[in-house]
Length: 528
Image (cartoon, rainbow, N blue to C red; front, side, top):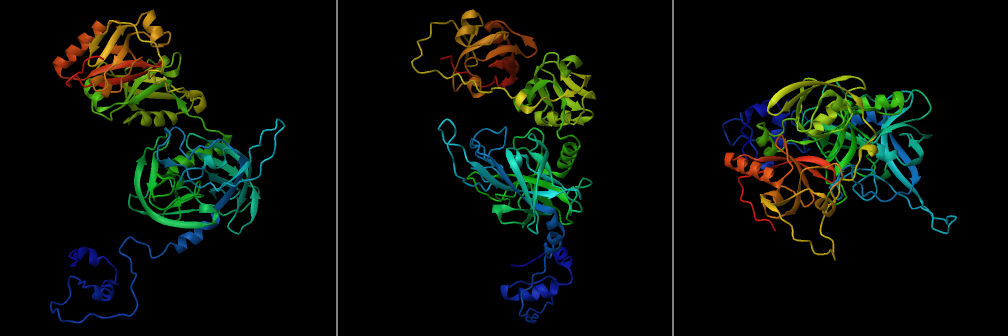
């Protein structure tokens, strides 16, 4: 093998010639060597481990400096129904696991305590034991960890590097970002700082320190693989690292090579339940902001618009005349909410918040969340092809549990269902459309207050079927126009086909509005 990058070798410190000598047996030759190929190279009996530029000789100095600030957290809690280690908000089976939950590639070290009879004769659920990691961020005992490590805790014990054990008190936790703060009594604890002034680059070294498998302080090294990873969380763009994160690392810090905290380890990619070397950390700036709020008041408050939103897909973007990943599309506006009072309407595309361009629905949620209650939020929206500027006074985002609604509602045909009566349907792009009269409303279980044109059947391989439309959906609007008859939908579809553009629909599914765009240039299958 011939190394040809002379500039690289020149930057390889003074050991380049020595390194070349050590590699002589492998047939390697360095540029700039004497032209005489018979010239002998200096030989050495010891292998050379001189790193290339940018690689540290060792992480030992960094580890010795920061390790005293990292703690192990032992948690006792009442046994809960298995959560399979899945991040809240992700669909079952999604291969991202919380390193700290039983059942997935996580860091819980669950015990199996004895059971006892309850008063009703039923076996009593055992106490569960789990371990995680954390780190001091103040000298007076405040410790950062993950919410999923301590959320069900009945007792918390903190073990220092000298094995001293302290009682931990929960100060506050934030399920939305999976962060929590606990405190121990005492003073003069070694602590570390979040790095907010700068970010390491993709490819820079990082070190994850924690308590994997209850082994105590352990360090693993790797590099930053990516920024801005979206793994299903509304409020965090995760930092992806390839330093191994295992069961017990949850809540531990990720350090840069200067010993500054750049992230809080919280999740792993885990198709099989074990670590495959891909980990995710909450970035330092987010962790710093959230933990300061938890220390100050025990909870986190976020700004709130009162809208349901979705991403702008390529088809929707084409129908609106904008590029995909431009803005967030408003499906519905909460009546009487901040957005409603500020003039936001269903069908608006929010392009900009307080001067920052919006690229997705999650991006809009995160930007609005930064606002305080009563603070004005400046919005630039696209409405019916025209730009408009709105000002909305932020509200306070309700608890996530309060916002959660049943998003299921699959309306598959049930066994032993009686035959459907003969119904007149209008075929549009593979949909069998009917007037939403009282009979259709009962037959399709359409909620009161939802008006439009009902979809009674959908051909699976049709344009509508491929777009995800299903029986029981109600078309409320086509483009900017409300519809009440199948003929109106068909006329709009014919016009869109003639113009060779997608057809934008606002539908209601189980009472929840959302936009879909149909590619009208595709062949539509006949209605079933």
